Image (cartoon, rainbow, N blue to C red; front, side):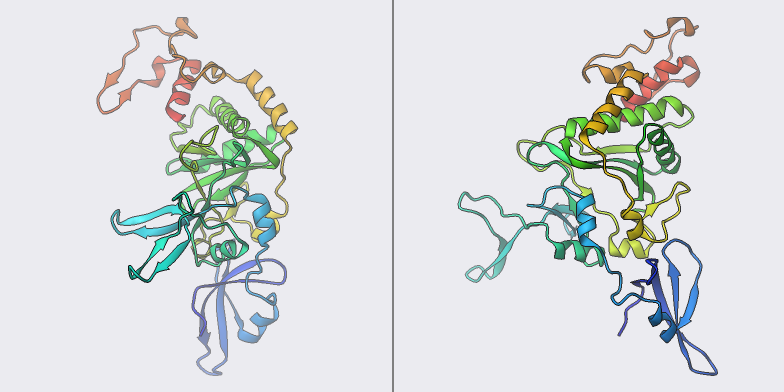
Amino acid sequence: MVRFPKKYQLKNGTQVIARTIIEDYWTKERSIVFQKVADDKFYSLTLNQFADILTKEAVNENVSLYRELFRGRTDVYANRYYNKKQQKEVYSPAYKWQWQPEKGRSEIQTDKDGNRIYKKLTDDAISAHLNGEKFLGIYPILENDACYFCALDFDKTEWQEAAVAVQKISEQYGLRATIEKSQSGNGAHVWYFFQEPITCKLARSLGTLLLTKTMSLNAELSFSCFDRMFPSQDTLPKKGLGNLIALPLQGNRVLEKKSLFLDERLRPHENQWGFLTTIPRYSKKTIETIVTELGEQNELYYFTQEASKQVDLLKEDESSIKEPLVVIKSNYLEIEEKQLSKQSLLQLKGLASF
């Protein structure tokens, strides 16, 4: 018996979601009701007509293409599960388990030194994620402190405006930013992919400079929606794997029209897999050139110095400050925008965002 909703792929590459089967009252002919991933309209075809336009297999995922783009550690991956103690869904490294008959339970396998043994990221695991059987995340930082992508994470208020603004600035520097609607449906990941592993420090410089450039040209946006960047560290922590990022196109989320890739108008691409084939990957040399250019134009002096350097909000343009700077301290600090120069306001936004 078919369980609904269920994903299918048409011969032209369009992904659709079958919702239910209906029966004509008079003729008893059965039809399937479905939607395209890219819109909210409902369509219906007889079962035979529907079968004629399907590919031979439901949602024929190109796992190889997927793994070429979303590359991180392959010796370990994260799996999402429900934690009873925390009473919420959490991610944890996927470990190998072994049944212990003398204890009457399964335990995580360990090596000769007592270290837990991770499960390797396999094609089957990726397929299970795409089919909705698992929720996977990957660890972007490789063991040599390099990475294959950079992603900016925007959540909640203004995420649409912020993601589009970053995308437009990226285009000015010859980069195509790939926007993915987050699994929550109320945020986005903005991705950049590399041909070769580049240092996390270089990747994070790219993300930081693109974001600060966008902030400098979009003063009307607060960018409070910026949550974090992946990779989240320049180097791999001595004890740990670094922050993970949830993989896109998770099967159950796709059925909910989440975790999908969006166009410049924030509409899902009709053919998600066809879109993935068009995503460019940039060389280390290209990224270095863009980072240098962005660094020379950076209006936020703070980001060209050591992160620990103090910032004087009054230093840049003292003449624009007509009155003493009033700061209200409660559970947070409150400063009226009209008291600050554009440069000081940008620096303050930068400090609050990173």
